[in-house]
Image (cartoon, rainbow, N blue to C red; front, side, top):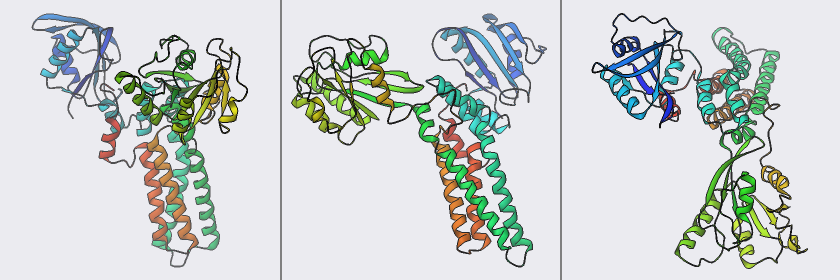
Length: 448
């Protein structure tokens, strides 16, 4: 297998950068870099070496050799910690490539780790999720999956499924008469139990995908109702420009925050009204797009004045989307009949000036999705691929149970049972095709 190389640290300037090599020629390439043919580094020990290019010192680096199979990939590996200059890194990568190494594809180091039995596929995906985690709760879930908890959770179901398959396969091969009714009833109960267990695990996806992917929230309203002020309050810093001039916000601003462990992409939008010029028209069009893309809208109204035509238009534009109404400026005299025009929508009274109602607004934003405590919640399904495979396995088990109720032959029942086992195996990579593996690892960063 080819020897591969990649920079494993983010692009740009840094104090330290890490270059990785994996493959049979890794040690020989390291010897060529330090110009010492007899160099025999002790595995897993860091050594200070000068890397040479055209008899000149390119950099002084810390190098570590990992001997197969005791490495991340299961192959011979070398890690070079050098200074994080883009110039140095470019020269080093070019030099390593001149010794017949090739640039790694996205996720190729982790893919080799899977193929060499160092981890299963769900653990590999957890590495990607851990790197991408936006909140502590998301990192906790990724770490649990990286420890193999998902594979462990699936193992009893797979074991039971195999046991049922063996019984039915044996009946086909060795039993002339039908299986006794007692044994058939036991198989039915097992299938029902498996359906319940897989359903319970699959149902955690509703909460799990929020931790991983987050929710998109757009703050909308007519000009000068305090959208940007609320945006800044929720962020906890002054991100948007706030003035008493209507229409200050001409373009959408998006920032990421964590609300009770859930990542939230928060967008402040331009005031919703009849555009006064071309620039404002573009901003309002982007507001409409942000509304269409959002999982939840925060409709901001000015509680110190009556409902305006623009307010009514925004309520109409929200359509069937999930939304929360934030009646702002409670620090000013309020109009008592504001709620009468909101058709029972969730309403929170806030003041961006005094912070009144901000905790209640945060709770209202999360209410449709639920909140999570990363310290008490169990293992969650966070990946849509895993959820889809669990759902497919459940459908196959239900199909097998129906076939048994209809007194179908063992071969028909076994077809569904084998499908269910294949779907469960695909979660951990036991039955995953090369094409699917390629699609999964293409989402990884280069160097991992």
